[in-house]
Structures are given as structure tokens and as C-alpha cells.
Image (cartoon, rainbow, N blue to C red; front, top):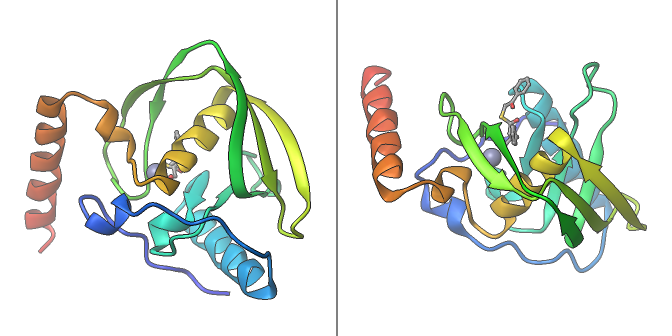
Length: 167
Ligand code: K1U
Ligand code: ZN
């Protein structure tokens, strides 16, 4: 297993559109293990393959307190959604930046697991938020891009200032 490098906003590679996984292989499972280890060590509650510069539709999520309920979503598709909820989000690709995004309150998602088996999941609350956030990564969108241009510019300035301080 390995801890992978997480791309940091505004890296252009975060805007890459991921391709569907054609076949779930041992290589896919090795990547999933590395992604899980990377997410747990960050620490975070989710990670999309895009964030580790692999442009395939793969997500790992674990919102459990004990880090013992890993959810793997390969080729996820939202098949139904309802309601709206404004929730605070964070992102491992944009450390130190938090803010609200309006998303569907409940979703139904269809995906493949790490064995390549299809499953359907109904999600609400933090899990629904996290799945939608990670699925956005797979289409090259980061959560701050829901905000106004002015707020995005201020966020970018804040990040640049922070980067200069750590150089
Ligand atoms: O996609 C990512 O960068 C992961 C992100 C997932 C996420 C969090 C909150 C709302 C939507 C999506 C994170 O994990 S940010 C870090 C975080 O939320 C966290 C870190 C440690 C403990 C608990 C939460
Ligand atoms: Zn993120």
C-alpha cells in the first residue's frame, strides 16, 4: 500500500473528466487500497481518483467514526434525488477552505463495488453530501466552483498567500 500525492487546487489536472472503469481488475483494487490509505492518513472522509491524478471513475468514502466502513464506488451514477440541503464542505485538495454548497438532500446511487458487482445505495445527510462532492471531482469540478466569481477569487488569493508563507 502507498500514500498518494493529493493534487492541490488550482492544479489544472483537477479539471480532468474521469473515464468509466471498463473492467475491475487487481490493478483497480490496488489503486483503491492506496486511495483508502491516502484518505485515512490525510485525514478525510472521501477521495476521488481525480485527486490523486488517476482519471478513472473511482471513489472511496468512509464517514464512520472508527474508520471501519469503507465504501467503494466505481462508475457511480445518481439515479434519483430529492430535496435540497445547504451543507458545509471541505476538500483535501483545498486545505483550510470550508463553505456551504447547495446539493440534493437525498440521493440514490448505482455503482460497482471493488469486486465489480453492481449495487444500489440510498444516501442522506453527510453520506449524500460526500458522494455528490466526490462525483463532482470525477467530472472535474471542485466545490468552490459553486461559489460566486468574487468569492472564488478571494479563496484563490487566500490560498496563494498561504502558499507564499510556507515557501
Ligand atoms: O474530496 C475530498 O477532498 C474529501 C473531503 C470530503 C468531504 C468533506 C465534507 C463535505 C463534503 C466532502 C474531506 O474529507 S475534507 C476533510 C474532512 O471533512 C474531515 C477530516 C477529518 C475528519 C472529519 C472530516
Ligand atoms: Zn474534494
